[in-house]
Length: 256
Ligand SMILES: C[S@@+](CC[C@H](N)C(=O)[O-])C[C@H]1O[C@@H](n2cnc3c(N)ncnc32)[C@H](O)[C@@H]1O
Image 1: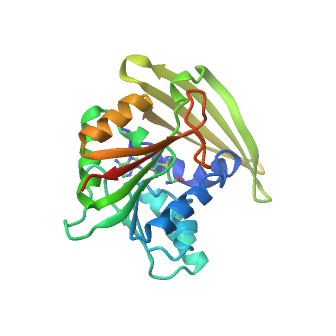
Image 2: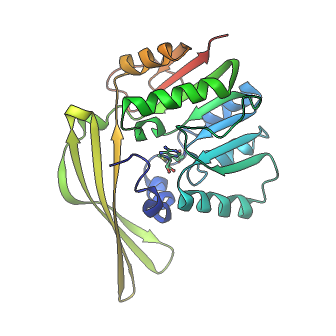
């Protein structure tokens, strides 16, 4: 099992589902931090552009990178619809080996919505932290959003966890199972999206796996990779971190 798997199959449902879950609640945070940096900004795992487009609208130059062809296709469609100009570049690539020469330096690297939790092994996290350090300007910011509650999610088997309409003719249900593998710090979601249009029914099954470190473990790995940790927050207004918080934001700085 690999953390980058499953996203191609998920792509056509990602925006539908996330409009009902995370929505836009993190967008202002990313816009603010991107504007403060002045750009250029790199977004790790830009997916369907949920964060990239609103950040690019603030006129900060942004490069988004993602391994999933299908997620990127959704993002590119959105960019075209929005008529956004040349300040936004979307690239296919793996965040474990960023495809930039050392002269392309970013002022900010963003890791929104748990993307670092798609790295299922410590070695992979180390590779990403090293790559990020190398593409950041000295003193540049690495901002990370984690979903800390995953390890305490209750396990369940084939539960209808979402149901709703998409457009006038389509009805979608998400049937989901959750498994915990504490020995590897993994939470695995087995998902089946079932779409009904009139009398026809189609379904797509895939799994997504996430690895969740404690805040202490993550900040320790950042320090060892050459970052200083500037702030750890428990909400998008930078309120204090607490273990029961729904989000964990870590702002780190590349050492000079
Ligand atoms: C939770 S989504 C986040 C998408 C977007 N940033 C957002 O906030 O809506 C995680 C994204 O990371 C991508 N991803 C996972 N592992 C990756 C890897 N090793 N290299 C590049 N992209 C990866 C997935 O394809 C997916 O689009």
